[in-house]
Structures are given as C-alpha cells and as structure tokens.
Length: 383
Ligand code: PEP
Ligand code: MN
Image (cartoon, rainbow, N blue to C red; front, top):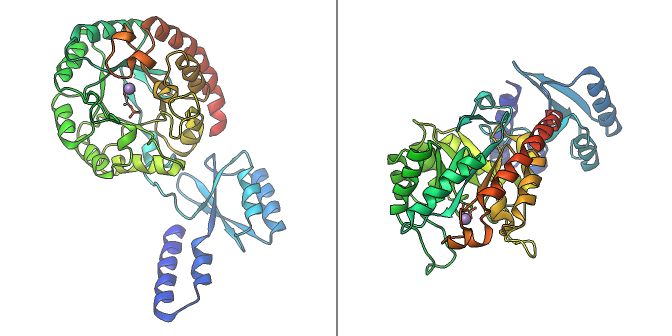
C-alpha cells in the first residue's frame, strides 16, 4: 500500500512539474527513494540496530514496511549518500538497496512464482543437478550418429537430450540447419525416453517445435534480446508451460538485462524459464567467449529461475570444458548444458572443436555431483 502511495506521489509530482514548473530536484528526490531489501523475510532486531546506526551517521532514519509475507525498509532523509548505500550493501544480510520497485516484478525472487517447482527428466531442479547433453548440430544425412550419441549421453547420466536443428551461424554460407533433423531428435527421444531441447530462431521454427511437442525450447544468445520472439515463445508455450532455456545474449552487460529478457517470456504466460549463462563477447583471449559462470549466484539471489550453465560455448574447446563445467557447479549452477558427440570429429557444427566425448561427459557428471551438494550448502547463505 505504501508503495502504491509513493508511486502515485511520483506521478503526481511529475504532473505538477509539467503543469506548474515545480523544480526538477523535488521530482528527482522522490524518484531516488531507496529501499533496503533483506535476504530474509525481515530483519531481526540486531540487524535493524546496525542499519539504524549507519543511517544516523548520515542523518537518515529507517522505516519498516510490513507486508503479508515479508518486510522491506525505506530510508528516510537524504538518501543520496553513495557511501551510506555502499556500506548498507556490504552487510551480509542485505540483498540490495533498491529504488522503489524491482524492474522485474515476475522474475524477482520474492515474487509468488518463486514457489513453483521445476521437474524435468525425472529431476527436481534446485535439489538435483540437471545435465543436458548432445550434439551442437544434428547431421540430417547421418541420423545414426545422433542416435548413438543419444544412447551414450543417457548412459553418461544426461537427463535431457540436446541437438541443433536450425543453426544461427555468423556466415550465411555456413550450414544453416535442416528440418529433417527434427525427426532424428524425435526418434532419439522415442528410443531413449529423454526429453529434448532444441533452439528456435523464428516464429515458424517455434510453430514446428510446438507441433512436435518439444520439451524444452532454447532461445540462443543471438536472440536473447529479440523481444518479439521472446513474447511469442511465452504466448505459444503458455498452455503447456514448456521449458524455455534462455541463453545470455552475446553482448549483454548488466544482469538486469538478462533477467528482464526472461521477464518477457514470463509476462507472456510461461513461467518455466531457465537462465543459461554461456559466455559473452568480447572473448577472453584464447577462449571462445568471456566465461560468465560466475554470475550464477547473482542470478540466484535475484530471481527464482534455475540457472543452467553452458560451458561449451563459453570456452569453446573440449579440453577446457570439464574445468568450466565444474567451475559452474562450484558457483552453484542448478544444471549444465554440454555439447557431447560420440565422434566429435565427425560433427558438422561446433562439435569438432568443443564437443566432449560421452566418457568425458560421464566423468564430469560424476565429479560434479559432490560439488553440487557442497554448493547447495553455501547457497543457504544467499537466503
Ligand atoms: C548452441 O547451443 O549450439 C548455440 C549455437 O548456442 P548459443 O546461442 O549459445 O551460441
Ligand atoms: Mn553449438
């Protein structure tokens, strides 16, 4: 209620500013009102005491806003002192110091949607590590190769099978994909029983994927800011709540940009969104991209969405993939999506460079399991 009042006050002040030329400082002062958002549902007496002491040094006071399920705290006084904000954000129990409202009200970890549970391939996400694996690209002229990989990744421990049908390629002269590969991955699903993940790049591909009953739609790095596609995916998958694996955009900077892209899908009707850091540009010298598995706890602290890291596109070379995969799990990843090929050299996409063998995949998975448990213990401190 208090928030609503503040919001209408801002709108009121802005109108006043327009109509009566009220000086803009008044409007700005209201707009930068700061709210302290704790990690837990409310601050305890000791924490409130500590915060009040910091605020007092800057001539400010604290006001608690009690909601039905949690409290947030408004700073009263001149809340523009950056040092004060830095000191508050340095407190372990303070999640962030925000301006009035979260930019993503659906993806926010405090939203009602945080209560939903995610289950795919027999795994309960956040409680069990999810492994998605398969070719970068399915060779439509050699379906047997993919079928054998599908069996092998399942034996290695994978819970979801991936395989590229249509490929986003830098050069228009490179292999672009082939709809025949869709049948191959459907056959592999029928043989293994594994749910399948494929990338769609446009509305037509989305329609075909939905018709085929694909279990997980991938939005690739190049389309992560294609708002029209994101909305369409949210709408078309809403009734089935098909999983959507949203990769981080190649040039995405602030975390907010990534989470806001997911907000589009959720706002359009599907809340089964998984966030996938996969490395960004510019690349770190020697790697394919700039590895970004380290953003995992940041995402988990701000949103409820499971974080599934893609180490393959991040580092881009098979020899680095195990290291990057284990690092991601150490950072608290809820799952991994790894390119794997029974014979990487015979692959027609990224596989010759970055696909690991099924034996390597099995090893990564086995080594990741205890790390996942250890990370889960640390994760409790994020709350
Ligand atoms: C892929 O998964 O094969 C792929 C092309 O992904 P990205 O969008 O992350 O490059
Ligand atoms: Mn690939």
